[in-house]
View (cartoon, rainbow, N blue to C red):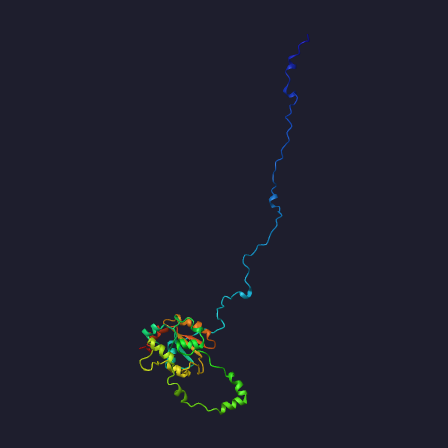
Length: 277
């Protein structure tokens, strides 16, 4: 029988025990982003921005102070005194046109010597031919006087010049013999039907016949005068006359004016009134 071991052999110090290792595990690598990684430039492909609307061309751009019809002069603004002088001393080169409607003229009258050209009911008045204008309104369409250069060919041709010099000149009374009235029958009938003729003339010719006679208009509707240099429009308060002055630029070679105060100023300041029947 073996001898018993001492008690100390059964009590092994924990420090002297063999180490017990844990099972083999693969360590994990933790990702710690560096503080400078966000500052590193990234490679990206950039594309140019596409314009939805093309840029305007230089010649299509309008200047800030550029106005339409900038090449044409602005209509002249006539005062009450200037229109009164024109009405008292009519001239074939400057005519006054009333653009109100016939019903307005019947109620209030008009400036003596003024022609009637209703604008609201005749918006195409400025685009009519000379014949259509005369048939509709009864007076000649304003047009500038013919240039003297139109007679250069006649003067340069001696045969034509001799025939003209040998032809008898018309007598001063020949015009009055062929045309008893300076106003056309078309305008007489038109104004008599509308009630716009004056009371002082039994033939239906109003004071506008003074301008018509000075212009040399006969009964055939042909322009025989020296032409019109300027027209002055007026209406009730200046709205329609302003529009007429702008549209009258279709009459090339004719200056345009307007009376902004219109009939309200004319009647309020005691201007002479020509009333219908």
